[in-house]
Structure formats: C-alpha cells, structure tokens
Image: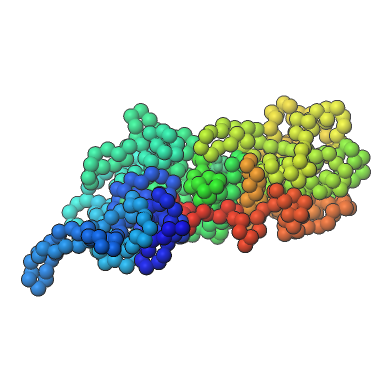
Length: 550
Ligand code: SF4
Ligand code: SF4
Ligand code: FES
C-alpha cells in the first residue's frame, strides 16, 4: 500500500484519497470546517491548510509576502511556503505533509479562526452547539488570541424558521455550505443556497420552499457551528451534561447506527444522532429515526396491571405474574398462542420463543405496518428486528392476522405477547377480545394493549442491552443508555419470571446466556462478540470527530 508522511508519521492511503481523507481513515484529525467524509469537497473554509514539502529535486512553492520587522519598525519583503487545502489535495506516494509541525500552518489556522470570528456573535452561553462547536474547539487548539476588531460586527437574520424542524442563525454561520451539500448530494433536493458575498453572505431557502422532508435534521447534524439548530433539541440541554451510548435505531429494518444522548441525572434521553458506519448508514439517519428517542418517554407502560380495559388496576409484579400464571396454567397446549415481536431484541424474542417451545404453544409475530421507504436509508419494513425474531422462531412464523383467524375459529384460549404493535387495523383485531387470558410484556401502549388481561412492563431498547438483525441480515448490538423506567425490567427477564412461575422446562438465563445460545443455535442473528474483529454495534468506520457531524 502506498504511504505518505504526515507530521513525520507514515500513513497508508488508498488511490484517490485526499490528505484529509487518508488522515481520517487512520483516526488523525486535521482541523477542518467545510470538509465532511460523506460530502463532496468544497474547500471554502481554509482551516485545513497544510504545508507540502517539494518532491526531491523539485522547487518549493513560495509566496512573496511583507513581514513586519520590529527592529526596522517597518514591513520588509519575505517569502513563505504556499499552503494548500488538505481536503482537496490528492495524496501521492512519498509525499511529505506538515500540519501540526509547521509554524506557517499554525499561523494560518490562527488567522482563519480570527477571520471566521470577526462577525461571529460568540453567544456560546446560549448556543446549543456550545461544547461540541468547532469554532470553540479550534479557537482553543489553534488560536487563543483576543479579538482585534473594534468595529460593530455585521448583523444578520437570527432565529429564522427554515422549516418545522430547523432554525437558522445567520450570524453564527461560517458559510461552509455543508448544509447545502447535504440537501443536494444526500437528499437530492436543492432547497438551500448561499446568497450575497463576503461578510454579507448567508444561507437562504429556495424561493417558495421550506426545509422539510425526511432528512431535514441532517442539515443541523452536519453544521459544525451553532447556525442550524433543531427545534426539538433547541434550549433543552447542554451537551456536556449528556452521556452518549452506542445504539441502533429502532425505526425501521435498515438498522442505522446511532448515539443516544441521555442526561443520566434525570434519566432522560435528549436526542439520537447518527453513529458513522460505512456499511449501514454511512453518516446519516432519517428524521423519523432521529425522533425515535421520544418513545422512551411517550406512552410508556411503567406499572404492572391486571384486568381488562376499563376495569384495569395496578398490581405488583409478583401479583401480575401470579395472575398470568393462573390464566395460563391449566389450558391445553394447543390453545396457547405466543406472539414474538419484530420490534423487540433478538435476546427478548429468544427467551419467549424458548418458553413457547417448552409450553408447546404456537408462535406468531407482531410488527408495525409498512411505511414510506426511499432510496436513501428508509426501508419499507418499519421493524428493526423481523429477521432476528423469525430466526429464533425457527425460520418462519405465523402473522398476527393468522392469530386473529385462529381466535375467530375458536382455537386459541390464551395469548402471551411481546410488545403491543399490530400490522392489521383495529377492526381486524376485534376478535382478540374473546380470548380469556392475554398477557402482554409491553414497554409502550399500542393496539394490542386494549385486549390485555395482564400487562407486565418491560424496558425499551434504550434501557437494556440487546441486538437487532437488520433487513440485510446484519446483527448489531445496542447498549442501554438509561436505567429501566418505572417498574420495567428487560423482557427476557420478565419471560424468565413467567416461565419459573409456570414451571416451564426452560433454564433461567441472563443476557450473556441468551447470547451464548444465539451463537450456538442461531449464529446468523448472534451479535458479534467484541474483540473478534467483527464490529460490535457497528462501530464507526473511522475515528476522528465522527458523530458530531465530523
Ligand atoms: S448553516 Fe452551518 S452548515 Fe450551513 S453553511 Fe452555515 S455553518 Fe455551514
Ligand atoms: S432509515 Fe430506518 S433505521 Fe435509519 S434512521 Fe431512519 S428509521 Fe432509523
Ligand atoms: S476543510 Fe479544507 S478548505 Fe474547508
């Protein structure tokens, strides 16, 4: 593999790599604003300037300059190397590049910073980007000089509503055009553009348009400063109080890799954002996926309940399990239905599938109905783990529609279901009201909840470790970001308690035991083990500052 030298370090590169991309591949960050690994090169910010040594025998590229000579108290002619944008210059074999080790680069970066901050409001105390802002980071690492401009800065529009989800502050904008390129190159919709020139320029909407659609939040995600903020996160939290946990989006079967940012003092998730994975979602997520974090708070099932809708009362977990056992124990095996969930983790589904097998019950699968797919990320299947649930059921499994038909035919007397989702409408589900015992292991309210006679609260994906297998068969783990809310416990644990109460012949297992069973019996949906070379939770393809918009 060809190599080049960056600050005396030998770096391998691939054909066509620019200096920044080659450095990014090996986890070295060269300061930059406008470059993004998922977008075309704009080379407009000049923060990535580097010094490139001439090849052996070659002539150095030099610039004629005037340098202040303190001894002469005058400007004197001088020459200095012509710096070049590392985001745009292709690497060649044996090239020698200086970034951190060049005094000319250090000087240039400091000047670029001063230039970008000339008209910047520096309203960091009220800016949502503070704590993850490149202007702050690079001022600390590459400038640290007081502002010399004493004139009134140029004022521009503030708090412009670009669309239902995005607010723009033109004074904070450094005109890097990342947001324009996301719209053009990822979404294919030229809804943003740059108007005016120099210190008057600002991002503007195409005439008659608003910034909406399924990927509007990606403009905020790539903005390296606080110019674009999202309506849902704006003024809600300071990023340094948030703890990031590697997760997988539960929004559809693409399985985009995500970070869940939670304030662990409040036990509350404040946002989800893309976690770079070249093989799954590259650097992006759709807006619906970014908003799935609200499921942790909304329509939650937090306490065990017994009784039918309208006559339901809170109970202790033990009482609810006893009630469920009472309804299930004496029934003939053939009349028991167990419903797995395409929304739940493979581990949760495995625990329930093994209980179904021990009880001789028939298995079915609940799921959310299909939604709008696109050619960017969104899959038509709104469920993150249909593949995992089907695999642990033995390969194929009946649908919720089949269950309703068998209930109507009088073949089913009791149901144990994971989740409350349904891919058929409310009228179709109506016959379930005839079933004597319906035990739901539920994290959120949903269409099946009205039929429950016992509800056991279980964790969402944000409160428990687990794995999903996406539509392309890629098993990916997610880590818990929060403690379980209310009285919820991991669903696999609730299944274990129910199995013990029923006297079912299944061993009581913990998560690691379930994963060992997956590896042994269902390796195609077993999550990769850390340290095996496979990427747990689809870890970022490259280091650098990925995850905050690179
Ligand atoms: S709004 Fe943000 S992403 Fe867009 S040009 Fe300005 S600084 Fe760059
Ligand atoms: S495409 Fe699917 S998995 Fe990706 S962010 Fe959107 S909903 Fe989530
Ligand atoms: S990152 Fe190279 S010019 Fe902006």
